[in-house]
Image (cartoon, rainbow, N blue to C red; front, top):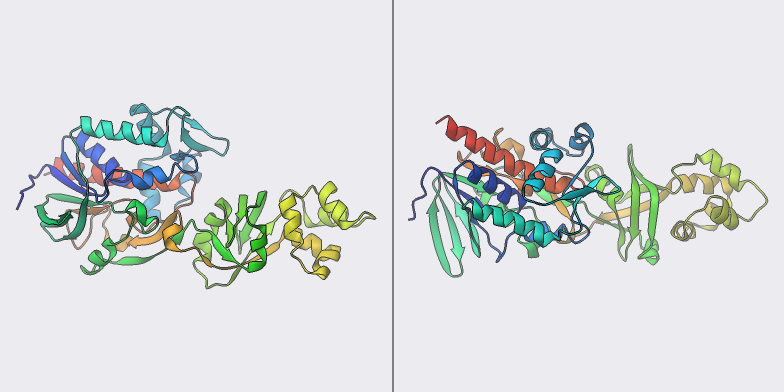
Length: 395
């Protein structure tokens, strides 16, 4: 059995949380080894670059931390916040800019793979070793069991950090196979569910596939979000939709969301415009300036709802969309659920297994898209590394 000295750290998973933990620890003099089941690091990190590489968000801290659902994760993000992420990127040589929506992106000369390379180059300079094609099989109080091709390895650890991701995008390595391993050790796991997910809807909306609604407000109960949505072959997607996931999750399907097609006008103002001599279709298009998609959406109404101007004005402000279910876990952006905070102490150390820590999406927290997901991964990786470092300084 290969002995790991006290100052060496083993990390399982080379995603953003694991890479961040490795950097902070290596900078503090620890010898860090990462074991990754893929052939390369940061597979899901790079997926974030598919729709624009949004690394964090620029909003003020008070509103920024409110985007995270659990008080524990809010405290951790506050410790290593969005401004510190920007400073960290700058230290890697990655310049950033603030997009029109407040999101933080690397400047145009940095592609996602180049950001990752700058990070990995820094880790190499710090002496971090990454072992690829090593699958995590098990662990106990003293050692981990890994599989490299057909060979099983047992390695002792002094400190072990688990950063194995959630359950979406399995092809990137986030297969959530760790759940059964941890559950077998009586570690409390909140079941994984789709998060930042589109909804399957009533089939009458499928004819709108590929059409966008911009500058609209989507609401569920007392929760709402302004933004953009797109209709798909199965339903509806978009940042307001993802935002509402955490609220609809508390209820059983089917449910009804409401879309306000004219957030800047009151129902009375809309009714006044409709209450004239012009044809309804002309008022909707010319006076209310509804988009083609909004007009097509209104055409799905029955005749009475469309021709009765009182009903129509109400519907423009509160168009009902029946939602039937979330999209399958493997295709959604992230997952809710994971290792419960009740299973962890304030250091993110497993209560049942001293010296074993968790970070990243495998912990039970939730956040919307817009840079918040990566932020929490960076922050939890930083937190765990800092806690381990503090412990070593006092022993």
